[in-house]
Image 1: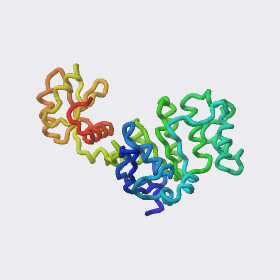
Image 2: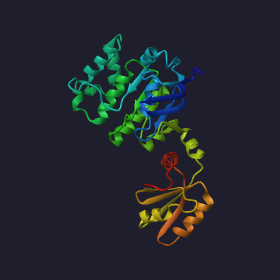
Image 3: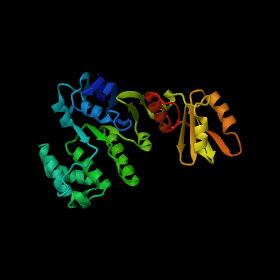
Length: 311
């Protein structure tokens, strides 16, 4: 194992009753790296995150977090990790400052006032320090949660869908903060549903039904599936999508607003099919780059045994 890894886990497994929720997951996250953890709800992301930081004991598997054994050293890991859950979990009848001071006391931190003031300044919360947490918008609650995660100077941040329900401007600001933290050497493992956020990560992993289906930098994940993709413009794209189901060379069709993405492993066969089916004046077809969303939809369908057009 290398000191350059904040997380280095192998073959993690977890069952709840007869449900196998995490199946042989192995991954590595470098220090100073933003690692995106993607997958649909119920895919095992949160359970995996909790096992990696010592909050949950795996049924099988091993590994380290910040150099500490995830099976034996959970107390040491928790002291060095900042964990931000999906739900806002602070006291709404306390001010921002009072919330941060309470968290600092729970960590047993010395010089609490200095630490709280630093967190307020770093996250742009100083002007709202005396505002009740319950009156904050989603974006400001998110900033408070991140400030609380950083009070004890963690080496690793575990963020479980931190931008769910937050407006686009607040999401953008939040990601700028993450990149600043990454530049300071803090590792960030973040689960997200948003493709634009996934593309801002240094590395990605995609999980479905407890299985790790792909991991690597975004271009590597896209290239690994070998898909050719065309986009089609015109009327009645829903009808065209139905007509292309099970056609030669077509592995997937996905509607994106006013365009239809058609993807397949056999690029030549796909091009011939599109020329025959969508080559009339009613449609405009053009080659396009396969995107992360195309790939993730494809991976999910392959894993669940589905083929053909998008649902």
